[in-house]
Amino acid sequence: MTKRTFLITGASKGIGRALSDRLARSGHHVVGLAHHGGDFPGDLVAVDLAKRDETAAVLDELTGRDAAFITGQTLFVYGGASIGKAPL
Image: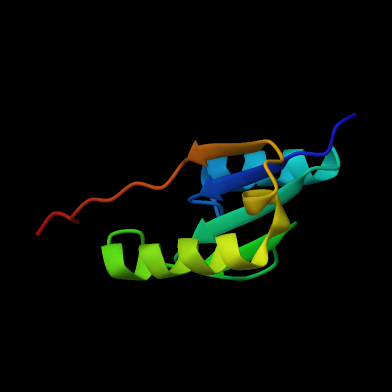
């Protein structure tokens, strides 16, 4: 099996968390982006994706730190995060 890197948004709960758990159990490297931290089966970065500057800074930091982002290793992205307003 080829170890791949997956970038998962909304990684701390729901489908994003389930996918992260499954990928990590299969031996892949998982980088999760989420509002809240906690126990995670890979590298979890706390970020509010609704804030463009914050998101850009996190992605810049990841590309500088994580060899998978800069060596051409396969990177898969799953967008599980949602942005919305709560009803009043």
